[in-house]
Length: 296
Image 1 (tube, rainbow, N blue to C red):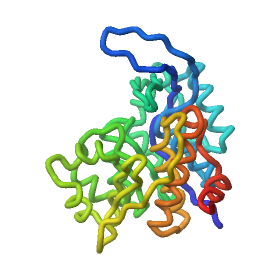
Image 2 (spheres, one colour):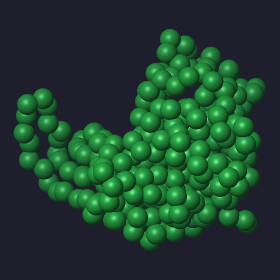
Image 3 (cartoon, rainbow, N blue to C red):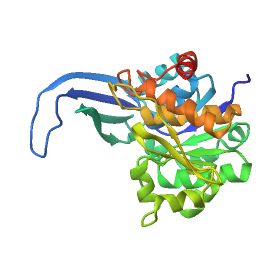
């Protein structure tokens, strides 16, 4: 099978991860159990996950000229992600994410840093390269105008665009119409389509809108009926990066030519495997592991 060529436009950061039995309330101090520094950022996570699953991945992003930036670039290279379009910012630190793992879930504070320099102009400079791609993936840890302009650019070029609208914020209706695939979770979908019943929204966007529902799976409308593609039950160790793994796997499968239901099942299996390891990227599976899991 030909490797699909995927451009991932998005954030790269260093994740500073604390594990604790419980998360602190306002004004409260609690004792943590461990601390780790691991590469992350939604864009970087999706790029690494897609590369591990067999795609030919090019990251389009920015890092600072600092130790974290160097570590981020080395991590891309060790995972087979092409870094031709990851340029350093001299006057800004690399992005960081501060993560608390407690009570079976995570809480995250993101400091964007150099990721704010993944501007619409920066992406437009890569127009000729983007036109050669089978799929583009983008998230919302970059400036809002970058998402809007990328949707317009991919629409003009006829290149499929997968928008993972996380972190949650409203996006123009024009963007929703221009993207090929939109993958919010339930919270993000409620914000995007405020006041509308999700069942109605799904019908308005057949085979485009895919609402992830955690352990339940992913829901979409196939043009005739609403479909829930179930997840795979696992005992989670760290849920950080599960959504990024899902999106990367879904994008990789679609770019390879799998049908929608098959792609979603592939993505669900990859995401379920990802939560059995530590760190956003630590548990991201390889292609053989996912295919074995699907065969079980």
